[in-house]
Length: 95
Image: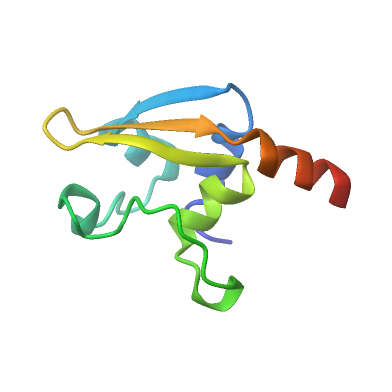
């Protein structure tokens, strides 16, 4: 079980979700987000999927829930996730 499983569950609901980094820390528990999540250009909030063996657990959480990172505001420490209808449709076809 990944520490990001709870984030995946949380993201399975609305079309647009805005979360402060502190809220994500509360959702995932444990040690919370790594330092790289707070650094612009670190790639932590990327949307790219490079094959299942190379996926970062956080990318897998929002990708599998059908979301993309739409915007990251490092100053406010907030991220906006937007539901990707193409990915949601593909997931429904797999089920």
